[in-house]
Image (cartoon, rainbow, N blue to C red):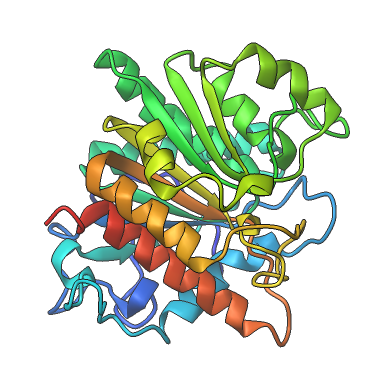
Length: 314
């Protein structure tokens, strides 16, 4: 199965059959697509990676890893996926080789998924994609007079305006989420690598950017992060390198000194309980031979992100 992207109407969009989609869920006698709340969007964008490569293979690896997950969640003592329902897009049209065009393509897919009343969850692919995925959410928040908050799990600030001649780069993802969207705030968690060119934008946007630095893990709490995120509409972007590199070596730019599993779960739990999560993405997994534990972790993370966002209030 080739995972790329398309822009058809989600109400008639071709879906992966049961057994092939995320958690092996798909159209069958268990899953009614009309009732399934989630649309998984595989989007293997990989044009501007600057160290290790392989993110184009991330979506398929996460889908495959999810087939090995237990759907039973001991925290909620049920199989939450059977409540909110998942269908995975069977995508066919190629992703453009130009990042600007690729972001427009993804923007269109997310817009159509939202128009269909579904929750978009994107499997990447490099972090650049968030700048396209966020646009429909920012527009909706602006139309309602609301502030959209991005909750960024990441090792890197991603606040450059460009990187190595590429305007829409993985190293500029959050800049291009914030700069054109004045109604958008950023809460960044786990940052431990930032460059001199990012500092002016960071310091001039102190009223919009709240950073929980990796160097201070153990000093800040999940409750403080959730308070900063607030109770309004929230988009979660999770760069897998937010985790300590000892947990996730299978990523293009691994960094020591990062989050561990329960750090992330504590934050996701509280944010899901108090805020209105409107969409999410999981990016920068670069599958590597012999490191299938990383693919499994990413798959389980995606399931927990969905459950905390869509089921925990129940």
